[in-house]
Length: 124
Length: 355
Image 1 (cartoon, rainbow over the protein chains, first blue to last red):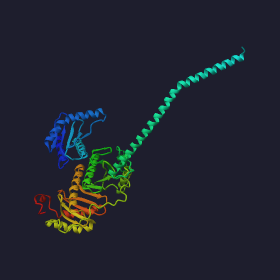
Image 2 (image 1 turned 60 degrees about the horizontal axis):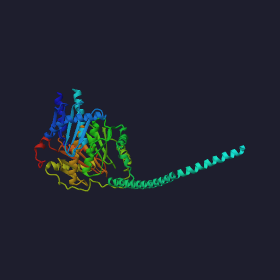
Image 3 (image 1 turned 90 degrees about the vertical axis):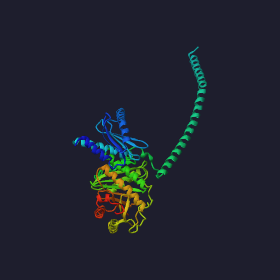
Image 4 (image 1 turned 45 degrees about the vertical axis):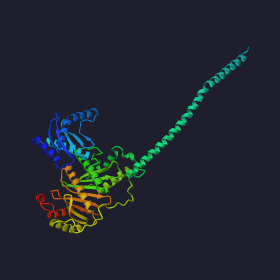
């Protein structure tokens, strides 16, 4: 099974029957979407456009403030919540939460997804 | 001129010089002494004003804290300082992490974020589950003492809301093969109550049983042959399993029910609508199907929800008066009830009324 196929399966299992998620995607440092699952594609497109500059900024903030390597970031808004999680030091998993979704649940989903992805990569 | 005269003259001139110096110094010092005295008076006045202001501020602070305590339902003497930071959560978690049967324990708030260090992503999932339990308990408006989830892979999650905490916090433990010791959890929650100053706030309060007061009539919910068979089975099983009420639900609606002093129809709907998604939430985060979820109220009564079959549409709701219904009895009943239910493929095809 290819890494890309594995990634798509993991994303699908993450978003399937998960009312807390509007979109989930994995974006590499060049802004290319490696895989995505979205209930609302327009939200996904906007998230992709901002994922790379946001990741750059977050990396810089972590470095400047002595936080070490970026692990995860939560952005809570009035209407939705975003979770960023580091996959391999450069690639980012971006999860867009539905209105009313618990921030902790979104972050847990992002971290669990990254953990499974890393386990899959190690196994293959 | 003899020597004695010279000595007397020297003494006299030196005493004259000393007296003159003293007089000059006294004259020079006088305005300074006066000024110092004035400054002392001014300082005393300022000090008195500041003391009065301090007393007023202290009174205002005490009144604000008392109002906060009253709003949170805490006793007036509760110490709110322990709520600051993560030390309180860490102290609570430290109480259970040493226990041999506890795999992971954490304290989380309503948004599902852990208040203690997370070692793995499983900790984050555990915190998310605790947050969801707090949200569901608030939505159900029942005093929730504990929620216990048993997964098919023999993992047990026990979530205990911590009394007197704001934002609301819950302790969650994950164990294998059996739930965390009730005695240990009771002791930990009591410790948390002492830390948060809520100990004794519930003393003497008799909680109303939120799952009581309704008696169903035979055939009220049973529409169709399958439903009647289910109701008959539930009727014979109810006394044997010690439950007050048993309900088989399809989707969010009761299909057959035997209620003897159980929750009313609207509450059954709310319970099914809340417990089923809560179980799904935990299943998704822990990657294992759920076997049952038990919600124990502050009054001690317990609602158990167990999915019937893998299709996910049918579920059994059992209400016990004093603690959860025996899991083995629930498992046997679930097995018996499955025989009455149509195969998943048939469910998808058949209209609701026929079932």
